[in-house]
Length: 388
Ligand code: DP6
Image (cartoon, rainbow, N blue to C red):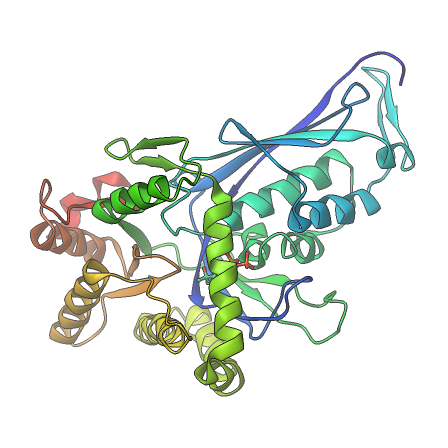
């Protein structure tokens, strides 16, 4: 290992959106949740993190750059992920380049990490989920760790809870687990991405909100690196967003009685029903459960002291619009779900429903108005022609 050399691995991981939400931890260090959750992994072409990890004997410390800016790795979450992967590192030999790294060498070698999100980090679109999943996956490949994706998910979980579900495509379940060390709190795939391929996901981003968020961050002198609203990119340090989910759920656990009822009585039954509706591709049941769970998550936020408001007027208008349409059709066409932010994730039954939904969104939130929506259509952009 005397010659200077660099060994690199690049990985790409999509984000995921929960249809049965994770909100609340029973162990904040290990990141163990109070209930199971289920999510859908998005198409990597649209919302993903790309991470390159590199190792070289010439690196003198671990370093990381997020969207081109160096960030500190001193936080417990990064350290936990690095430590866990290093503990599982195995020998590697690259005969062509004459590189040999033994299990013991990994303890002394340092890594450099460069990570990019291709979507707005600030928009409440679970950027930490893609980020930590990608980091853990790339490090595991670099260090030749032999663990499968479920085992890696238990490490990604220690970076950010929702990250454990991004190690798989399709629909994914995070089992809350029972044991104290958290080794059984990991993600498993419910069905792969081909199972229910006609679903279309539309993410409506409220431009006004992103704008005002950015302004308030500036006023509070948080780091705001680059903001291109029209260009669909709004990049700020992801750590602010992470902290806000983390803090929010901490306060909910401390103060909300409704959360106890949700975690013990409601979610266990919902998880069983949701798994069944996904396996049977039963959209009516899927939509009912998805909307109900999103609404209960936000009710639990309201039940927190002081109350947490993640949705805004535009979010509420979108809910009314979808509810009215679903009722008028007799059978649901679209499900909505909102995470820790005001942006709507809309899951349409099929391309025709997605096209009609987009038409409605354009009608109610016309371009160049105060509430213009910036939609990410995950899938084929020619969808509008299917409106019928
Ligand atoms: C509303 O995974 O960001 O998106 O574990 O503290 O990092 P930490 O929280 P995080 O929380 C995500 C919460 C959610 C619901 C979900 O994804 O299940």
